[in-house]
Structures are given as C-alpha cells and as structure tokens.
Length: 316
Image (cartoon, rainbow, N blue to C red; front, side):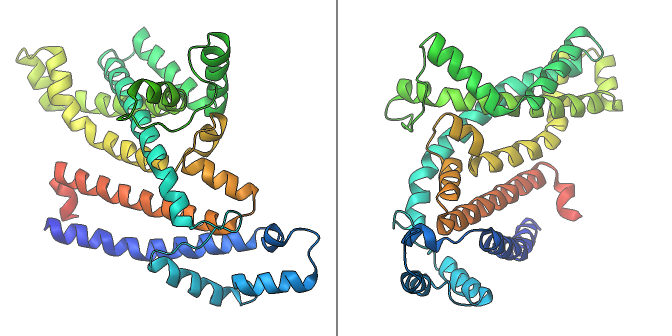
C-alpha cells in the first residue's frame, strides 16, 4: 500500500512539473527586453545581433525553442550563462550548499522558538501569555524580513560591531565560529518569520486536541499537565505542523531572494536576482526550474512522512 501511494504521488508530479516548465519558459521569454543585447551590447550592428540570435537559437519559433530546451533539461543540461559563459548547473551547484546551510539554520531557529511558544499559548489559552504569543506571531508575520535584516545589520554589525555587515558562505564543519557569525544574521531574520508561523499552527492544533475526550479522560486520571501536553497532545497536534514545516523548508531551499540580497549571502536567491538584473535568462530559467523541482520533492517527502504518521491518509 505504501509503495502504491508513493508511486501515485510521483505520477501526479510529472504533469505539474511539465506545466511548471512551460510557465517558466514562457514567463522568461515574454518579459520585455532582448537578452541578445546583453551579449552584443547596445552598439552592435544588426548583423552581429542576428548572428548571436542564431547561435543562441532565438531565431526559432517559441515552441521549437521550448522543445530544444526541455530536451537539454531532461539530460541534465540547463544551458550556459549568457553573461559568464559558465554552465548553469555549475552556478547552481556552487550556491546550493550555502542555501542548504542557511535553510537548516533558519528552520532550527524557527522550530526551537515556535514550538515552545505554541505549546505555552495553548496550555494557557486566554491568558496574558496567550495574548503575548498572539502579538509575537502577528508582528513576526507582519514586519518585512528585509526590514528586520537591516535593523539586525545596523545594531549587531555597525553599532555593536559583533558581527560582519555582509555574509559569505563558510561551511560549519570547516570553521563553526566563523560560519555562525556569517549565517546567524540571515538565519535569525528568516527564523523569526518561521517561528511565528509555527507557533500559530502549533497553538491552533493544540487547542483543538486539548479539547478532545481522551485528553479530558487522561487529565481526570491525574496525568500531569506537561506530560499530557508534551507526550499525548503534541503528538496528535504535530501532524498539521509537519505540513507547514515542510512547506517552509522547501521554500527556503529555493532561496530567500530579498534576505540573501540584504546580507549579500551567496545563495540561490541571490543568484536568481543577479541573473534577472543582468538579463541572463538562461540562468534564471534553470535556477527557477531547480527551485520548483526541489519544492516538489520536499512536498512529496512531507506527504510520505505524514502518511507514515497517519496511515489513514494512504487509504484516501
């Protein structure tokens, strides 16, 4: 049954990824501007532009260009950057470790802050603590992440001088202290946002579960409140939260464009932004497609884990 469920989920991914590839291809080509100008420059003659257009295959109809591009993608070739002349796969591979490290740090902060806050709010429903958590989640979700990032740089980087004002990628296993200094800024900025989402979902799920009959029975039998919350209620309430965590994890694996730009962090998001500004649409197409595939795979893994924890899902 489990294998059939996984196979069915894989099959449903195929048309979605196909439609996503069509959308990405058309979106890039329908944007105003001519990427050939990026290669030839504004002073190029019409003959030079026509020659470059032919070399890049831009003189073919869009359906033909899409079929050629998709054929290369299926073989693992995402094209060559118009600006740097480097393979797009290499550019993405160089940025992916930094994005993975930032995502793991972000989710760690979000989980360690969001889950306890959600549990405290649910256990004290209607109290001042519950209202404080509600205010925290509202602020964390309402304030733009780039503004938090700017304040973080101004306070910890410029005023106190504790942290660098610009980030770069240093693997944790090579130099943990330096990696912490360079990653904590964008990770904290994004982690606050994630913690607000997680806290809100944990609280809502816990309030619902705490009102169930078996919880009231356990409480009547004298089970301690924190054992009741952490061992019994949270296990049932964690399933909806798992979905949110999976979505956020997949989102940040695709890069945090604004936050990475604020901290000058060399992740996938910054690669996409710089490629957009340079009109390097080949890299934009490849990077966005990789982001879509990663997000789809993370969602698939989340669904599989969800079905393992709740076998009733597989029977639907």
